Image (tube, rainbow over all chains, first blue to last red; front, side, top):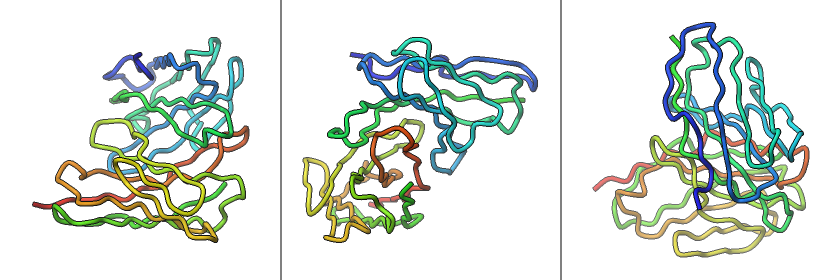
Length: 115
Length: 111
């Protein structure tokens, strides 16, 4: 049981390049999330999804797009990377049932540097 | 959204009990309170969750007063490996709740 898996783990981009981060979960979770974490800071929600085919904006959505074509996958795209997007990106997932509260399972992170 | 407030940092020594308090004055009736632990270069992981009164597991205890406007994470007899950032999260997994994290509390355990 892999849990939440992110690829790639490390990437260096040039300003203006595009890339996609892939998140996969094998727990049949309805909800999936993308967070970013800058050095010494807390996590900020970029986008989230409450089910296959649906996405919504979080706190800091500008410069990012997402897609949830399959329940187990949640893709985060950077169309034109900027140095301000240098960060660690965490994908997460959770059940939707109220009885589960809001236990979130995180991936190991993807380190992105934009030069 | 229920906003949370935690101390930015705390220091402790090995073997001591550590209590980290989180304020959430506008918690909603159906909101749970969940604490996460994050080590450097890793994603946060679940520690404990509660709704009211006291919850205890093999790792920690969570104390929630009757008004639920705050909660306290208690770590008994900490060790160096408990050095981490601890996040308090309040909210329910329903559409419209974005499950935002606060800045967390950076706990440093010293020998």
